Image 1 (tube, rainbow, N blue to C red):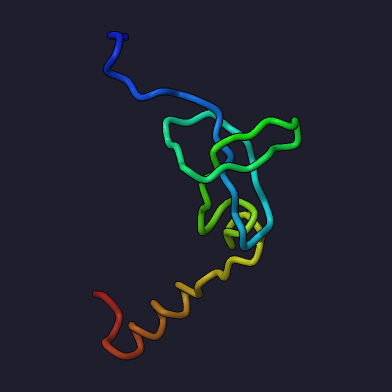
Image 2 (cartoon, helix red, strand yellow):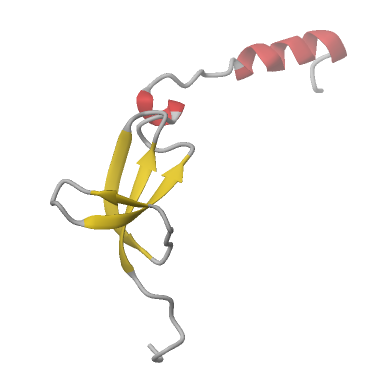
Length: 82
């Protein structure tokens, strides 16, 4: 990698306030807001709207659409393919 062209890669806390979930990782993203983490150090914090703790797919609350019923309804309405 060439020097002086890449943004700094540092520890950052991503926080999902809706779910009360946060995790520490490394990223090139940064923020002016900071938070004290469990290890006693202060890190920049980025608030996100949705994470694996609040996304319906990961929490098991996702709804499955009835695609078969939609196809049957379409065929009743407009006739089956020939």
